[in-house]
Length: 356
Image (cartoon, rainbow, N blue to C red; front, top):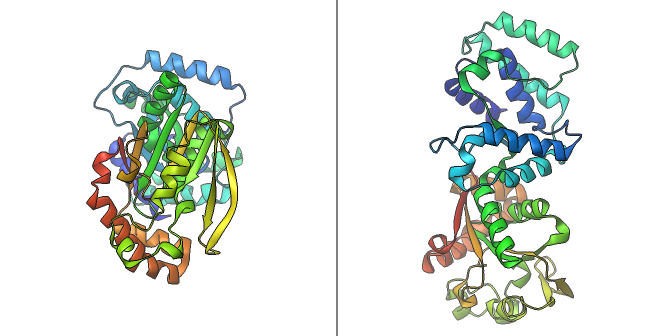
C-alpha cells in the first residue's frame, strides 16, 4: 500500500480542503476506476462534451494526476492545450470502464490508510469525523460517492478517471487519431528500454482502437537466429535483431492487403509457423530496435518509453526471474542501450513517455 500512501500525501498537499467523502472518493477511484456505473455510453459521452464546453481552458493545468491503482484523473481544463479532443478522452474513459478491477478488500485497505492519516492530523477534518463517515459508508455497502460541496467550491473538479497508461499516452493517441483520419491508417513504432512497458502500451492501444482495427507486430519475432550470431554482427549497435528480414517482410510489405512472416520463438530457439497478418487501419510495431535506421523512415508516429534503472531491474526480476534478470543486466540491456545511444533513438521518436 506504499503507492497509495504516497498518492494520499500528494493529494492532501494539493487539495488541503478535502472532506471525508472526497478522501473516500479518491480511495474508491484508485481501487475501482471511474466508470463502473456506465449504463448509457452515448449519454456518457454527450455529458463529457457538455462538461468540456463549460470548463475554462487552463494551459497551466497538468493533463493528469496519478491516483494509485494504475488509474489517473485527466483534467478537462488541460485537454485543449495538450491537443487532446474530448472524444479521445471519452474513448479512453469508456475502454477503462470496461476493464474490471479492484476488490472490496483492496478498498478497505485504502480506507484504513485514510484513518491513519486522519489519526495523524493530516486532514482538516478530525479522525472522529472520518470514522463516523466510514461507519455510514460501510453500512451503505461502499458505494461510489460525489465530491463534497466544499471541495467543488474550492477546486472546481472536472476530470475523467482512466487507466494511467491511457493518461500517459493521450497525446500519442490523439496524434494517431489525427493521422488515421487524414491518411486512413497509421503505422506506429513503440521503442524503448527493456521492461518499460512497450508490449503493455501496444495492448492498450489495441484495446483503445479495437482489436479488429489493429495489428501488432512484435520485434521479438525477429530476434537474430543462432546461425547469424557472429561476433562482428553482435558488435553492431542493434545487430542482435534480424533487421534485414524485418525490412523485407514487414516494412516493404506493409502497403499490401496482407503480409506474412515467420515468428522466431526465443523459448524454443526455432522459427514458428508462418503467420499471415491482415493490414488494418492501425499497425503497431512494438519492441526494442523497432526504430533501427536500417528501416528508413517508414512510420507515421513513434514513441520511446523510459523507466528508471531501479524500476527496470525490479520489473525484470518479477517478470523473468533471477537467472534471466542476470542475462538482461549483463547482456541485453547494455546492447539495447548501445543501440539507443548510437542512433539517438529517443530524440528521433515523435513522443517520449516515462513509465515510472
